[in-house]
Length: 308
Image (cartoon, rainbow, N blue to C red; front, side, top):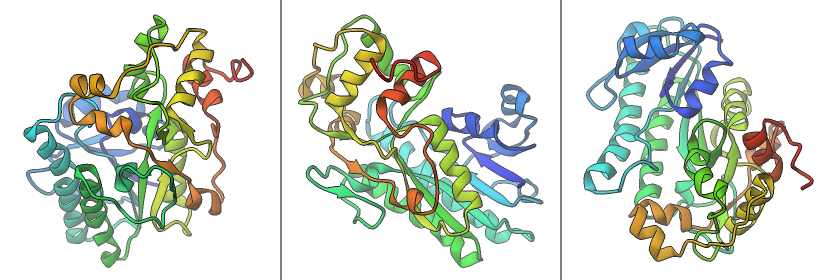
């Protein structure tokens, strides 16, 4: 399987590259990407996603495209410029990628494009799967437009999978990189009232689902990238405290979170109880289905704390 990857220098992208043989990557700086990703034997091409189409030669001989590029949503306050970058990097970037596929003489057979659980919005009291309707609001609108651009590739004969990714837990970055410090010092706690469901997934399972989507012909359209062991923010907080052997008694009030993070705070306070129905029905076996085992691996490198 010859793969092209966008967003390859990101947290998920780098872990995915380790599972691919001689991947091709698109990056804002091909030279910097080849240096950073040298261990993965990549071939890189320059691409400014919002400005235009990637070079046609990047698609030569490609079987599957993994589209992971996008402005990080958890970094920086959400002013108008940030919101525009979040949208354009995903929607316009995916449009240009599909347009390049359309213009290619040798098209890939599969496009696996990232999306996000923001598609569902704040849905307390509901259990959501891939058949659930979208919500409204900024992130939901972005996800709908993002997926719509990816799905255009179906008209070109490609099988398209849109992986709606939840909060990614893994060592060396992602959500855990921002959460660990206060918890290690014993000043971590639930966010808001803690009753909101938090759709999480271990990094290894994100990569596993990306590869599952690429290889499994029965997967088409949306697939939820979340673990089956759903939990509330309060349950997550207690599990992290147990794994770290630290107290978790200092809650962060909603107003304080909004003051610190601006618009992104609402993402952390929304409730989404999401099930990975498509993944399970098409035979994917989660490596980390339960939160305590996932956190134990992230913190300790194994599941030794799962019984704590």
